[in-house]
Structures are given as structure tokens and as C-alpha cells.
Figure 1: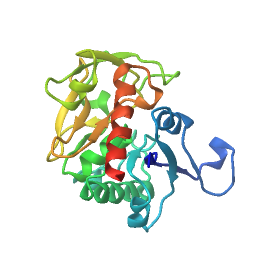
Figure 2: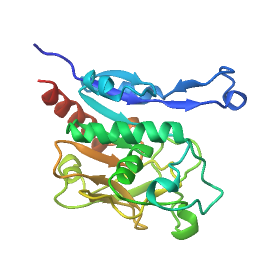
Figure 3: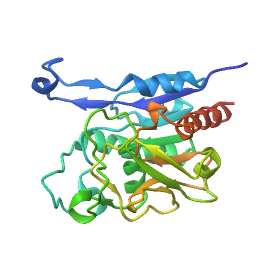
Figure 4: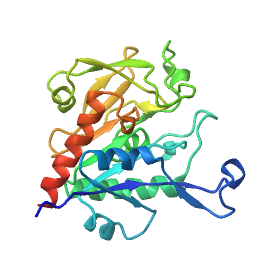
Length: 243
């Protein structure tokens, strides 16, 4: 039976009806690029709302993507206090995604964390975050690039002998950049697999898992061969997971 793997994709939860003018009550949203990328490489995408029944969610899927968002993980979750007014938090989403990630890791479920998703992975494994890059790591690179957000604006260097090294045809590539935070201390069990020229960590991965990767850029835009290969590998490993 040639069953397509089911990839769960987390959603943004917003209450800001004035800003987005969609509905007066809370609603979910996610850009179509995520599901389009999953389907392009042979998966079936389903969207995951916030729920207390995480085990049932994971029972229904074969792979997981935790997506990016416009909000930040509260520093209290990695043992710090808020040090900048640039931080905007959404504890309801963060708590759900942290528990979802923990339980997915317990199952060794294929898992790709994108932007916020990478930071979630890092925090739950004992890592910390740079709260606002310009405050402590001034750089000529604007990691929070202006629109259009999908266009690559800076390079990254791939670390030798990592999964990303195997998936990337080149030792360096260009990525889009839409984040003001980044990994600081790397979580337990992870290695750095890509770094920006200014030293900001752009990707982490866990060698002891089948497929557990976090990338700071939005690979769902499929700008590069590396982006496409990340989704191909997620689908490949998710298919193995479901068999």
C-alpha cells in the first residue's frame, strides 16, 4: 500500500481582529507555503489546532512541522526574564507547541522546526535564546529583513558532516531572514548545522533521531536545493515512520 505520509502543521492563533480584520473572535492561520511544500514532495498536510489531546494528534500523523510566527517564547521558559520591549509573547501557543514537540521527540517522529519551531526545539531541550539580536550581536545582516520576506537576503555556511551537509549540494547557500531572536546556548543532544557569516546559528539537528532538524529561515518557500531536500527528507522519513 503506497500510503502518503500525513504531516501535521501547527497554526498561528490570533486575537488581533483589528490588525487582521478577519473575525472578532480568536482564529487560526498559516501560510499556504507550508502545506504546498509538503504536498509537492508526496505528503498530505493537515493543520493542527491547539488542543489538550496531544497524544491523539500524534497518533493521527506521521511527521510534524512546527511553524514560524510573529510572537516569541517567553524567556521564563528558559530561565530568564524579559530584557527587551521587542518581545511579544503568546503563552497559549508556546505551551502547546512545547508539549507537542516533547511528545513527538519521545516517539522519534520525523520533525522539522521552522523559525519559531527551531526555537521551541532548542528551549525544551535546555537551550536558551538571544532575546533580540541587535541588542547583543550587532551585525551588518538584518535578520529581520523587510518585505518581501520570502526573498533570500544573506548567506549561511553548512557545517561539515551534518545531515544538512548531506542535503545541501553546496557548502553555503542563501536564505531569507525574518527573525529577531536566535539560538544562544544549544539544547542537549543537538549540534549546530548551519551558521550565518555573523555567527548567528541558523540550523540545529539531533544526530540520535531519525529526522529532527530546526532551521531559522523559512524553508517552506523552497528557494534552494537545500530547502527542497529538507522537505523531501521529512516526507521520506515520515513514510518510513508510518510503515
